[in-house]
Amino acid sequence: MPYDFTTPVDRTGTCSLKWMVEPGELPVWVADMDFETAPAISEALQKRVSHHIFGYTRPNPAWYAAYQHWWADRYGWRIEKETMLFATGIMPALHSAVRRFTQPGEKVVIMTPVYHCFFESVEENGRVVSECPLVFDGSHYSLDMRVLEEKLRDPLASAMILCNPHNPTGQIWTKDELAEIGRLAKAYGVTVLCDEIHCDLVDPGFVYTPFASVDDTCAEVSVIFISPSKTFNVPGLHTSAVVIADPQKRGRMARALHADQIGSPGALTVEATIAAYEEGEDWVEELRRVLLANKNRVADFCEENIPGIRVTKMPATYLVWINCSELTDDTAALVKHLRKTEGLIISAGGDFRGNGAPFLRFNAATQPCRIEDALKRLKRGVESWRRGVRA
Ligand SMILES: Cc1ncc(COP(=O)(O)O)c(C=O)c1O
Image 1 (tube, rainbow, N blue to C red):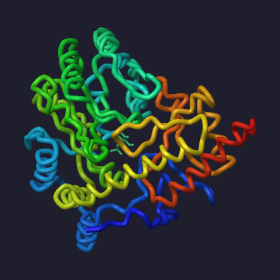
Image 2 (cartoon, protein in one colour; image 1 turned 90 degrees about the horizontal axis):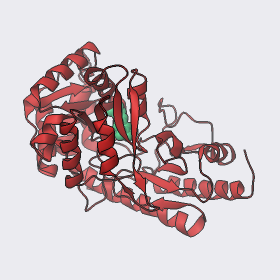
Image 3 (tube, rainbow, N blue to C red; image 1 turned 45 degrees about the horizontal axis):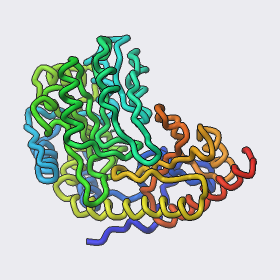
Image 4 (cartoon, protein in one colour; image 1 turned 60 degrees about the horizontal axis):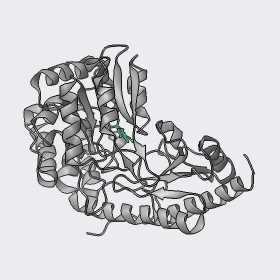
């Protein structure tokens, strides 16, 4: 069935975080797609809404089964029903987990550059970020296991946040890398808080490995966060699952979710999740092809038309990581310039810490005409920046 990933959808007036912009501005920052969700989800929601009663809600057996089917069929990971907990989104659950699995003042190891909200989950809860910087060789990122071991060996390190696959660098961790992370975490008594929200959105031909599926050690040391929100563009429904094999950790997390009052679904989320995972596969497969074409278009355009900036081509996420190190060692001012002069709202790499400062992050999950518009604005903005204009 063909789906429409081409016709622009007007999102103004829908309280969209991304689209609350000044007239003429074009946002390509937050990881929120400009595509309508899978038709099966909209239909399930419409059916649910037509009931007209929106009472307190609990996950039903079909909610558990939907997650189980998706991960078993696509990734060969068998999730036991009793290991699953509902949470109203990955970030609320991650904040809760940081509070429950670490003590104030302790360190949480994070590979950087990474999704900036991870830092908030640590620092706003009175813990300390311990950065394990990824190594960038000019075109690829890699993880230095010796540095990671050094960070995990620190007696103050009690947890690690792993982004699998990794936002914003677009890396898919290999099974061997994940196994080594699990082994080190167990050796040093560190809990791995593993965020797999971007797992489905990898380029066609690539597949991610669920951390807990690697071996018993990875399962034992981990708390896994999964959700349909990125894959199906439903982050505003606030829904996710936390999967924890170890019964003690699971009991603690269940108490944490309850104490923080984030363990019960809103009235619309259960049906949406079931429709996504039971009926959304064709839509996701087409989406993955569209996203790859969009990412390639951004990379090709930059290479052909914007001297001094280069795309780091990586297989995961729809976020394009653009190396601007020939222009600047920190894109914060360039980002302001692009918004002021061209109305282009794009993320500064420094937000993601580590060696991210010379990068821009471009969200390519939008219609081709908007991609073209954004690229023209980027080109013009970089040209005026090069001429010394500063907004
Ligand atoms: C790695 C990562 N984790 C979590 C989130 C947000 O998750 P949620 O909306 O379920 O809190 C995002 C959103 O961009 C993300 O990139």
